[in-house]
Picture (cartoon, rainbow, N blue to C red):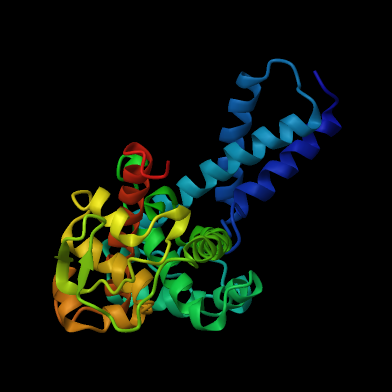
Length: 311
């Protein structure tokens, strides 16, 4: 076995993570010691022989953080108070918001979270290169992504994968950076999509047939090439059965008309088409819009690939 001094260093390392598993959480000393002891017992069973220091610290960091976050969540649930073990000095006084409220879609909880994230997220989005007039759209996409059920993960949302609210800002920050890059790439890929300022209500398919699209919302010039050498008429002809009416409407208004998300969700008819009440908040409307957009883009990607429309 290792020298006692090494064990002392590992113990101190474990206690630091037990008390501060993430920024914003500060467990009492007694609670940290309890978590630390439990983790160290597992460590001894897991490693009969002491591993290299870097490996030991990596294992202890992961296990201690997980155990400390679980203890924090359990303490808050038992006390009925999501401020338990919250570090009031976190980021110059960031409050402890309700993770349960975010998961339930409560307006007050979401508005508080949005206000908090606006302190830094728009700056990160701009720094990634997103134009000022598109920053709000990316910000809203990130909010929607947090609350979106992920089919590839059995419907689990990002909000369901965290144990305490204090994990949400860091998760959101990571999401902002990724979404900003994705937004720029999407805009680059779609820059050649046809736009028709006349906003015609019909679409002439490659066979010459005039067809009105769902909601008569698609303004296109079928002579102009689209992304990947396709025009929109070809895309719609090949994938018309893949998306619902509301999904086609979302795609055409955002990408063909070039409307902003705010313009789309401010339209009472669109709000009804999204299945929402007229009094629903802007944040709720944007989340529903992003949900439908995500389904639409995923469906089109599968269609274009599966039906060999890109060849």
